[in-house]
Length: 161
View 1: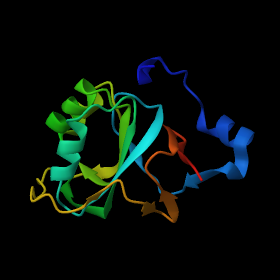
View 2: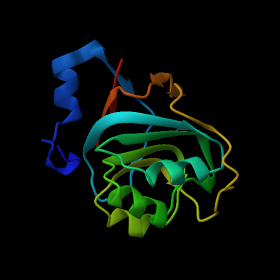
View 3: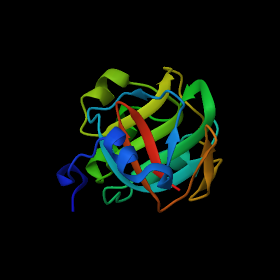
């Protein structure tokens, strides 16, 4: 099933229904993509001011998944710009959650892609490929593992425990 055809689930209602089966990320991410509500199975990346792994991962089939990038909360460089985001759309990703910054936010806002990030910075990141893929990441005290479900909307982010 295509992520765009998945019925929208409101995070507040989902939390009311499932409660402590879900972890809520309290950190206040901005909704920056053209799709304000998105969900899917998680893939993870841990990197710091280096987006080579983000680019290569989003260039592969996403199958409606959501990429969660732990950039250490750094706003010093952008971990995704419009060309990488366009690649994510073309490859069927439902969305990207970045504990860090993006750039090209106006172009990204026009794409059919869910994007949650802390903010934006026009500065490019390194491209050395430093980081790890499909590892447990922790954002705001919430552990996020590859394969669990994540739900994102304007109210916030919920993750399967």
